[in-house]
Length: 370
View 1 (cartoon, helix red, strand yellow):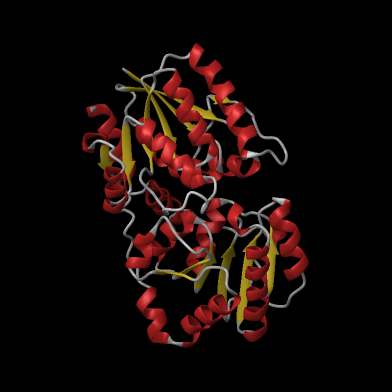
View 2: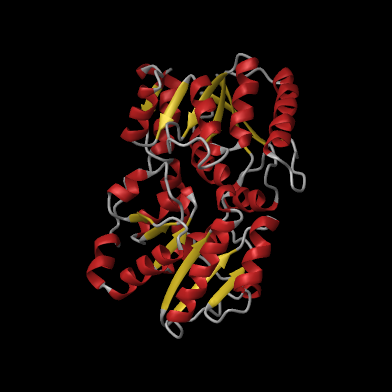
């Protein structure tokens, strides 16, 4: 019997870890599973866990208002150190590039517990963009006993850093597993959020922008571009922007876009709602890494509000485009897709280079065979 702990702390981690938890549950004769939430996000994490019917066995409850990455890392290290003293483990499974993942990997390394990294090998090549995620994932990969790379490019990134080939498994990305599962669920819009009143005529554009490197002037430029898109597309375009609660995002977004005709600002939405908004949207403007991976399965073009991406496969497949945070680039790229059917059709293809929905099964099989 293999004892495995899955750790997650943020909504994206939980979404991508949920299929792995489900796959582990299907092997009760081989795996004793423990789930642990650090609580790096609280309310947003709870919604995902309910959707996938996961109740953490351990909740470290580390969330504090306006905490810094260093404070999160310190609390995770201390909390997991105490957990590892009580639970003898064979494997600790982590996902992605959060501070929860990085600190958990170090804590497990100190406790001589084998680490498996889900979504290993992503690289932007710039340690400050995204920050602190690029450094976090470098650290996790280099202490992992198994690196589950979502793509061949990710595998090559790991090999370039002298990570041994026998440590790496190309599995696909578990976000595709999660998306396919959730896309089949019935969705009833919450009438209190105003989404049920979205026009059925015209063009819906989903917007998400929340990353740390977007704070400040980049976010101001994004909002200026959204103002221009709403004005130029008056009567035919509806922008929907679920706004992250971080004051560095919420305050400038509501100051610049609150009350602008054609712009609907809503609180963060649950994952089921997000998936359905992606399905209904003509296109998506985002700085989210997860959405870059999800939208291609739905055939929804993505304009990436970043200067670099650690997920270039979508750009190379022609289903996403880097536009950065320059106002003119964002506006012109948006209307090129809206006004040129050939340009739009070239991007609106259901082609996903990130997986086929079987990544979680491959990950669990690789662990059991290790």
